[in-house]
Image (cartoon, rainbow, N blue to C red; front, side):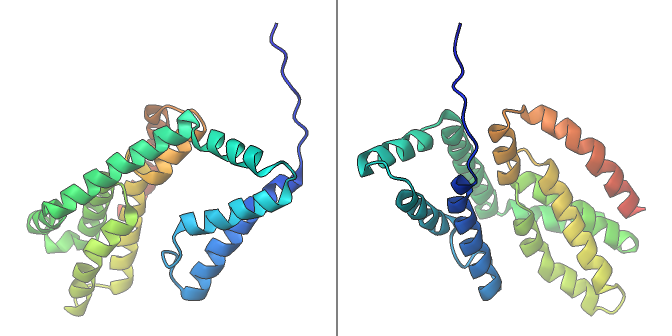
Length: 208
């Protein structure tokens, strides 16, 4: 029979993580830009704090760090991130993003522009796995619609943000989706089925 070694919880183990969160959020709030400081830099600060806190030899600390970095779930997430990022960058370089936007605007009537912006943003976000990318691509067009004076900028922005978040929530190449499913050992299909039951009714109510 395999014996399971009991592990005693220690709140001190969260200190490096809290340091990472504090630095990342602090710089983001101060600079008003959460991309100003790359997350890996803040992670390094947390790792250094962990190294200072615990009393093992440097060799043991590095061995533990490398063992954690070599975890199969971590490596799987990194591989999926790379492939998803390559796919998103390739589609953007090919002009697919602009093509989707202009095709949607040609098909959708001006009477349904709010719903149209929501649908286009959702489709773009699902396809690329990033809500921010969809917002950046569509924001100039949304502002252009509002400048005509016939459409409300507030509602257009709401449709853009809502559609982008809706698409990101259901995208199988979203970084948050990949991290959630891999870390919790959940199938991507199960996560999608659970999300669609919540997201689709909310989207229908919003468009109605």
